[in-house]
Image: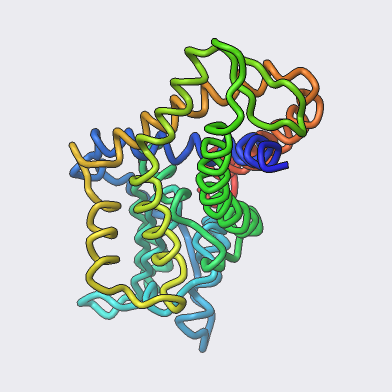
Length: 294
């Protein structure tokens, strides 16, 4: 049973785990500066007695920035000339809009987030985040599930490894559980998977605890230990994220191969993997390339 939970959880959240790996490795190449913004103007009429909030809501709908909704108070301000200045942050970047009431135009500066920045934003979006775009909200719930699933996989992996110490098979074979019958696979890939998981376990624990606390700050106050965990989590360049990302890639590749060798688990596993690919992969692609929210 534990083995199935471990395998099925990994297959179901495979896209999210791959996302975490990519974001971790990309920390090596984190761009220090944003690209030059694209600037344009377009017609816009401010209606009589319309509040700043109402204007902001109209602008965000006009520009199709559903990923920037709901519009928060901090996104609404005024520049030195008392023009209404709107600053919309979203997963795909940033739109800075100045409402020129006379002569009735919008001045828009759009900064497009890189693919890595976009993926990084998605990997920190959990159920604590409330979006006006249903796609992002579904993603937030799903990514919350994936975050906890990683903890389940780590715990079940330790359980399986510990149980294996007492259920060793014939030379060159591995037996994960007697209840599943004889489950065999190559010694080499099995060892790679197992030792990579054990080697990365401490980092997984640090990043998991840090991620949960940052996602749900009211649950647990960040003290000295969590402060260290957060600094480790947020390191860029040659920190701990890239090696953990590589470890997740190795675990994903070897895990897929080991699952495929279990012929009796292929049908259910393929269904879970396909569902995860459709849901998570589809949302990632749609929110990046879709007409709305860009």
